[in-house]
Each structure stands twice: as C-alpha cells, then as structure tokens.
Image (cartoon, rainbow, N blue to C red; front, side, top):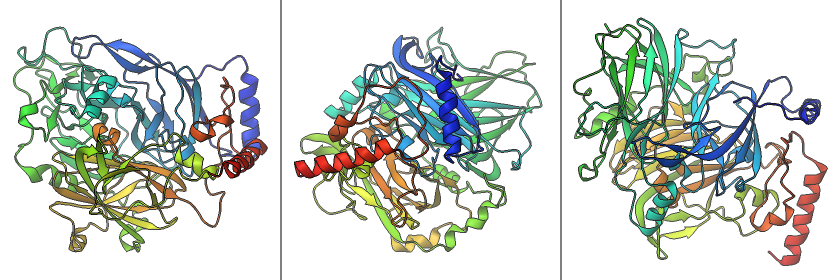
Length: 591
C-alpha cells in the first residue's frame, strides 16, 4: 500500500528538500511504499502452510509506477531469518546498492527495516520483485512491477480496456527451509505438488486430480474488449506453457522491450521470464474458458500432479467451463519451444523510454571486447558438499558483500578472475568475479550441460538475445546470430544440450549479479558477479547510501537500527570518515 506518513513527517519533507537542493534526481516524482514482510497462512492445495506475505498479501502488492519516477520502499522484516528483496529487470542505473542481492547488500536482519531507494530510469514494461536469499522465493514474497510510459512516449498499440497481472509458478507443500535442506543433502527437489495462478490452486477440471474446495482464480472480462495480460513465471524450476482456451495471445512486450506483434496459441514461459499479451474477448461465451499453465520439459517419472487452471469468465457467460483442457504442445517436438523463442523479435520501430527509435542502437555493428563461454553442470559433490557450477566454479557468498568490500578497499573478499572458458580441472568453490570492461561490449554464450531447461538473469542490464541452438557452440555459430532485431530482455532460457548467446553493453557502473533463475541451481552455486567500474570517474555510480547495513568484517560500522526512512543523494562527510577508518583498521590488521 502507499506509505502513510509517520508522525515525524517533517523528516520526510526536510530530507526530500535536501535531496532536491543537492541535485539528486530533481524534477522527477517520488512514490513511497511501506511494506511489512511476514509469514501468513495459505492453502493453495487445500493443505494449510506457511507462506511469505507482503502487507498480508500473497502474492504481494503491485508496484505501479511511471518511467523516471523515484521509488522509495521501506521494508520491515518480520520473518525469523534475514531477508532481501531484489527487483527483477529493474536496471537501477549506476545504483547496484539497491539491487537486493548478497553481493551488494547486507541482509535485513529479522525485526529490522531497511529502505530501498531507486529510480526506474528509461524503462517501460512488466517486471517483478522477489526474495533473493535462502530459497525464500519458494515460499512466496513476490509481486509485480509495472513501469508505465510517460505521456510524451507513444505505445505501439491501442490502450487496452484492462490490465491484469498473472503469476504462474510451480509450488511445493514443503517449506522453503525443508526444500533447501533437501538440496544440501543431495536429495533434489522432486516433482512439485502443482502449479499456482496468483497463489491459488487449480480449478477442479478433473475430480480425480483436483480435490474439492480448493480456491481458484477467476478473471472477469467483458465481451468484445481487449485486455493486457502481464504473465510472470515466478516459480522455482519448471518451465510452463501458458494458454487460454479458444483465445489468441498477441505478444507485445517482454521484460521492458516492445516486440513485433505476433499471434500465439500458447507460449512457453521459462523460470523468471515475463511477457505481456493482448487478448481480445472475441468468443461467444457459451461457457467459461480455461486458462492453463502446464509443465514443460519434465521427466515423465516426476510428473506434476495437476497443471495450473484458472477461469476466464465473460460477463455474459452461459455456464461453467467443462471438458478437457486445451492441448499443450507436443512434448517430443524438441524444436517447438526453441523456434517459438527465436520468433520473438524486437520492435525496432517502436519508441523506447526515451523519444528515439530503439533500432538506432544497432547492436550488431558494435565491436565485441570480451567473450565468455559459460558452461553449467548439474549438482555434484565439491569438497564433500552438493554444489552446482559455472565454468567449474561454485560461487560462495562471503559474509561481507562484494560491493561493500570494494567501496572500503577490503582485500581478500573476492577475486577478479572468473575464467572466460571452462577450465579442465576439478570443480571448486570460490568467490570469483567477471572483470568487466566499462563501456565494453560482452558476448556471453551459455552452454547447458544439464538435463533440464535453465534460465539465466543479469541484474542491472537488458541484454540482446542473438542466437540459440542445440549442440555445442563454436566460432562458426556466430553466422546464425540475429544482428538486427534480437529481443532485449533480462532473462533468457538455455535448453538442455543447447546454447544461447547474448550481447551486453557494459554501460551501467556497479557490481551486478548474473545467476540461474532456477532456484535450485542458484542456491547451490550457479551465480557470478559482473564488476563494471569506470576507471576515469569514480563518481559514475551513486554514492554509498546513508542507511547502509554493515556486516562481515565491516560489522563494527553498524549503528543502532534507524527507524526512519533516510535519503542519501549526495556523498556525506560521515561516509568519508568511515572509509578512512576502515583503511586504517585494514592496515593495522594486515588484511
């Protein structure tokens, strides 16, 4: 919900005035949210279980803003363990301090609050937020982000009659703590208990599969009208096929990029991906219609008990939905999903967040400065622990966040030595970081040696998906790249036994997280950070926030928990003293 101003509202007014006087983002509106994160009870499959709610909601509230707005979200952690929120797809220009991952932020301790402050700069589209620590996304804590266009920027389709956000996800009755213990013991996740729509279980389309009395989602619509459906796969590890009985899906946007408008009867949405569809209610409403999210690329021996089923209800519907669900794609047609992904094109004639054509970027004409071929492998024993790896390295999160260690010149926390190829040596656990070339142009090829579809996400950036195919990537594979209208997005799928190539313009200063969106792969070590430092200007990135939480070797800097929202536009004298103090202590200790 929107923030209710506290008794000391003078502090907000004074801080905001100071922010504007010091030149921090003056002229762009602010929006304030106050969120309490806590455990609540839900019964998606008819069994009571503990889930993570925000403001008592599961899923959490929608963060609905307009591009260039400044967002202030005060988060109170009422869980029994540390917590962080990350903003999936929000680029937060030059401000990785607000990214909400272990490499940039100390966790918010139980009982504490922390205030995020960032600008949704030059972005329009559909995104979501979720907990980034401790497998907590498996318990909920997620919600939608809508970034609207400014009035001066045209949208390449007529204004829809309604805007609907849908969260589809695989779901387990086991708690997130039990699931992470299973992973650590090498047990694996096993088959989910089902698929959710907006935190609700399936409509009883089959009494043999779905027990009676389970609440389900109903989408109410008017005949003849067109609605924008923003669909997010917020699940743990399962690719889902989304479809609506007897209705076409017109794809118009994915993760902040307008796409060439094409009709699909269904769409494979992989873990962590977001899509916007226009759906016109053009049927005769002889009955309600099924909305389905069913698993893709799953082992038949680990089949999910029931797909997700919601109901599309016309106001003039003649009766409830009945009969079989609409058919999914042929599971044995391995190229169906890949060809569908290849068909998604960037609309280079549409206006972007700024009033200039997107196609003017001409990414295919830019010289590549660095190439990384990143090979993933399934979980294996590394030093007696079950771990996953990228290029043979399983990431270990240090107790001191990487960006904080960098800010205070603390040595030994991480190494800028992530290999650009798989090294033919035993896997190891390490904190190895990609040393990015600021203003460079990186080509990354993900090679999937696992047996399941993997998704990869890069915080702070939208990258160009330029190619994918089965087999092993070679230098000759570049001849198949789409160098003109490959879609720009923040999460891409990599099919089993296949590769996906992306291009990244390294223009966002900070320390940015590249990780598997499949939660099991991420939790066991499939992540790495991209370090992007401007060597010519130390002030390229936003300065250290005044409300920074300190942990690890910097714990001694932590003050008593502040209970007020604090703004931090400009560098402070206090932060300068902290940096000098840490340098002295590091020198004395010989770190």
